[in-house]
Image (cartoon, rainbow, N blue to C red; front, side, top):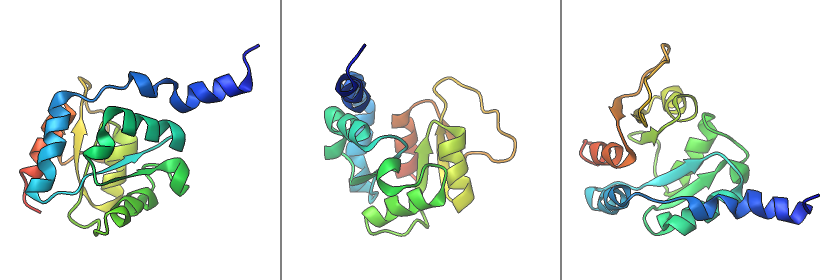
Amino acid sequence: MVPTTTIRALLDTGAADRVVLAQSTREALGKAPAHGWSCVIVTNGRTVQQEAKIRNTGLDQLVQGWVISESVGHKKPEPEIFQAAAATVSLPLRGAWVIGDSPHADIAGAHLLGLRSVWVTNGHAWTQDSYWPTHVADDVASAINHTIGTSR
């Protein structure tokens, strides 16, 4: 039998050391502030695990903040988690974009709040018929570059 502490450690940090941030995404995030954009990560999951991923990939140096569902008691697509993200950088949600790869969590969350969105396809076809993303991108870097090239 595997000890509970071993299981907890695997859940908290096990996948974090395998997550890799694409160089193109790193570059796109690096350009965002110069274009007047604040980037905040909004993610569902356990705080310890998600923060380990953020730090291990260097995202903590590239974004202006993050909000993790376990920490705020709300999950995407609930409006409160997106509101918490805006509060993290002391900005209104109005004018924000949501970039994500989950039609339900990310794009539906943006739709519920009347926000613009970019769906990162990762090679998948859009199957929802009650809401649509504002824009579609093949990868995260393309999504960020599209967003920072738009007017507020």
